[in-house]
Image 1: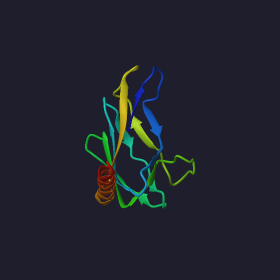
Image 2 (image 1 turned 30 degrees about the vertical axis):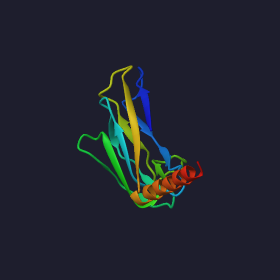
Image 3 (image 1 turned 90 degrees about the vertical axis):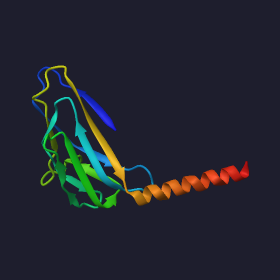
Length: 138
């Protein structure tokens, strides 16, 4: 999923955000989540990451601070970036540095989830079986 934002005159040089990322496909967990920014926006701080079970996970950024990688082990169906439910410390929101963008410049925040291979194989097997059954009936 991707969301595009436009910086407006008077906006602060840093924008904070938090989010819930949820896997909606039943039986398939999230193994890895990648967050990326474009157009000169960079992560100022990598906030907290917690799982549905309450485990804390570290986000690892690249040298340019425009990509964050979150590795989840074991896989989970839901993660929380920052403090989306306003619970307070020790949870901290993420921050994006917008100082390289001018007024009316846009940037995109993209979240990409990479699912566990076993879950995908199970789903593909189920789809193949459904297709075979349908073909036999025809």
